[in-house]
Length: 264
Ligand SMILES: C[S@@+](CC[C@H](N)C(=O)[O-])C[C@H]1O[C@@H](n2cnc3c(N)ncnc32)[C@H](O)[C@@H]1O
Image (cartoon, rainbow, N blue to C red):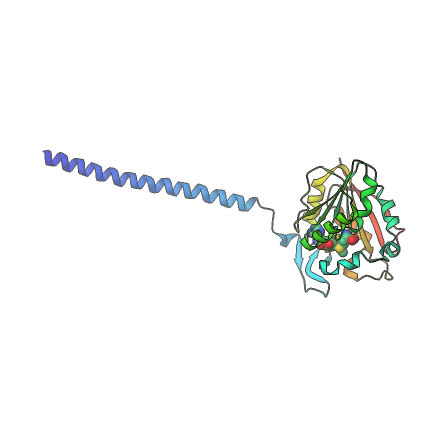
């Protein structure tokens, strides 16, 4: 009896052990299933891969072999070419005075110079937003940011703040910017759609975004074709965002200045 009870107890204990092992296994399986379903839904929640927005092509000499809305994206101008951005004759060749007038800067404005390079334009815009304003000078190349910071230091313009961004995000605070300007930059963005979306997020309602691009329509502009953009192409690419075209300034010798306003 005692033995039986013991046996029974033993049997019960081993049954209990087996039962609890099975329970543990079931709980474990359930946990794995739940975790897997979380992982799968997180993966599915990601934006669809770039293949839908971008396509591949054979890279041309100045391009990256990636096409967006009917054009090949150009290669980024490396920091090694920075001296060209600061060349003495640039003000005269590009009539930077006309560009600055076209931007209609006002004291107190927060301006974002996207793809600021060495800060050529940021340094010229900064005095016009004072007092009370600020210029974010954003670039994707750390070497450009270093050159920019050195130039800003020399200029003594404290209202310029440099910021390193990523290839697909300008990384500026939401709803903080009155005017975002890209001078000879947009055509070389590897992720134009994503960068535009991030600029839209950073713009205040009613804020402006300005494309300054070498005129593709003018064969006399001495710039490689892939580094130019037509006004029609700029408008086509801006049209996928909640932007209203405001005006195009065509008085600069090499570039057009195409201005859009973010819808409220
Ligand atoms: C031709 S330079 C023009 C620089 C400056 N805007 C000027 O006019 O002096 C183009 C600049 O865009 C920057 N750039 C390229 N892709 C970028 C991106 N995804 N985000 C921010 N800057 C970018 C490059 O690093 C380079 O400094």
